[in-house]
Image (tube, rainbow, N blue to C red):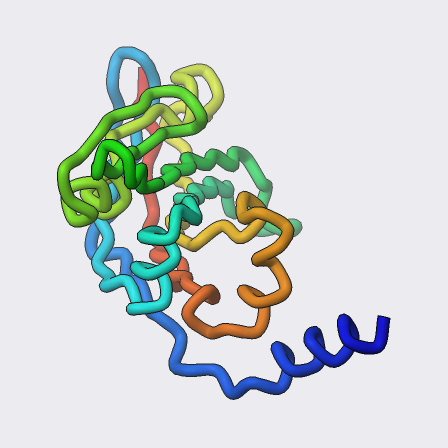
Amino acid sequence: MLTMMLAVLAVLVVPAAHATEAEVTSAKLEATDEGYRISASFSFELSRGLVDAIAKEIPLSFTTEVELTRPRWYWLDEKTIRSIQTVRIAYNPWTRNYTGTINNGLQQNFATLEDALALVLRPRRWIVADKSSLTPGAIYNVGVKLKLDLSYLPKTFLITSLNDSDWRFSSDWKRFTFKAEEK
């Protein structure tokens, strides 16, 4: 028991390096026949620690969050819609391929990590709101953010990841306004 406590304490005392920063380079909401789709792109470089983690078969999950709120002059903004898309990047040493999985569904294999990360850097346009869920002609505040989602990590790495700044990977919210399509 004492050995385990000392090991945990040693992990917590190790100085952390600089956190990896991500940036939302573009984001816009588009009206389509199916609903409102988000189109976004991000910019970042993975730290050496995160690249090593993937090489050691620790899958990383990147979550893109989108929030739509409608401002109200008489009260707090109305929370309207929250949508997320998670891309999981994993390495298989037997096939020497990287796998990108979107929302535990669509799965693709890639020859390089850079190719797999394209799913994160330029996520597919996904529907964040049905046509009927936004009030026609209303103006909405939209926020887009990307983060490394630690909730998907194996529990054995959670303590280490909480102390290491390489694992605190997130962008700031990119905010813009959007006017819902009128009928």
